Length: 180
Image (cartoon, rainbow, N blue to C red; front, side, top):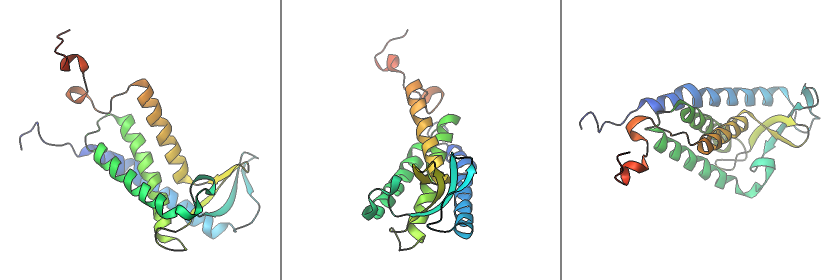
């Protein structure tokens, strides 16, 4: 393999070591804190005025506890998302794209771990949620990371920001043979 064919490995290190793993650790530590400090069924405790409260919920489904019987499906989706992030992140040199994928990976891992290790069982585990947003929904740190990651991806796509730099960027004028 010559120098030009060598695949860069640093992007995945940035995505996981500096973003996804810290998000995962913070998510799991805050969930552990919530399990030890809050009671299921208790009224929300104010955290930031009436905007955000603390309330322990074991979420058997997806967002807003939807699709409770399909927890296994969300586990499969999380594994697929992680595989796509690893595959596409291998050559990503743009820091904003690395940040967005790291947030998505950390959030996906945080909720996947809950689905794998929490009762009632593997691929059926309930996700620990504890941040109550004015009674509209209850989430966790992994959810925040996923939402921020998705927003960042949308902004990058809308702005046309390439995920790589230099010669890896698609340049339609070269494909068409234009020298301009």
